[in-house]
Picture 1 (cartoon, rainbow, N blue to C red):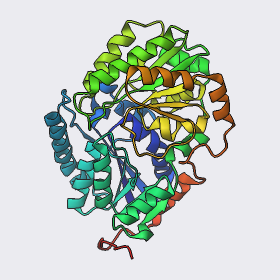
Picture 2: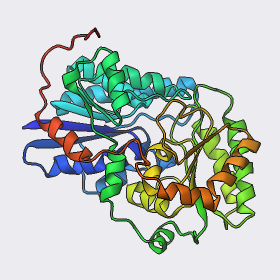
Picture 3: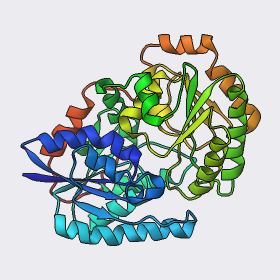
Length: 387
């Protein structure tokens, strides 16, 4: 029986992978292992390891790695601590296959550790580009460290082929997050309001803002521009649900500014460390728009038929549908973008567009699971030159 180990470091990657983990857990064809690290083990970020266990999963190893600073040196030290912890965890668990999602620094540490243990890595999702974050380079590095490749679009599959990976180990499967939305049991608006202790009403936006890590020193200016722009819609009666940033370099500066701003507007703004997958999708479902620079605005939000205001360069290069409005990270551009995103005519147009989400493909979960269970994971990787 194949032992399949999921390594997760954030609420975001866990929320996307959880249904796939459930499928592995319930299968008689394989055995599930779970390693939690980074933000999952930090009270500052909501101690979301508790959410994993509340969902019925056993955490087989906890790798504490997150420092209380967000400088470049602290981030590098966190990567080192991740590798040190995984050295012990993987030596004990000895999985046959490791599954990692995305492009964060702790996932690079995980893929590197797997390489030395000679444990094949299944990677969700390579081939994408996000030019405004160093995650872009990390993602491509993880691709070269991985054995099985699952992509969210056909273009991304072709890019992995360009990188010399074998075509019989690359599959365009669509976004697991989008697939999850199709199968989610959503909370009602009143249930969401009760769970977060905040009255949303019928006019609100969901905001998430992360530092653009290829532009160090810009975090405070860009965040200030977003917050001042959001003030203009609060004055018009809109509420704001803010999901807090991840543990990126510079992320604590952003989080501090958001927390202080939200506290000063407690009747109109609710800042939440972690909503969890079901609450997050339920909040998105009823929102007027998604605002910020999170990948969820480009990947999942279009499936709800709602506009996304994508700010700055963090997601530059990523595929996007017609519901996404791209603006610069200055006050005037964000205000203008908010006006468009919240315009009833634009929202009506978006809701009527078919084929809105470029990341959607039928049968995503089954396609990934079947290959995790049965795809060959032995042999030697060779670089495949294109003709």
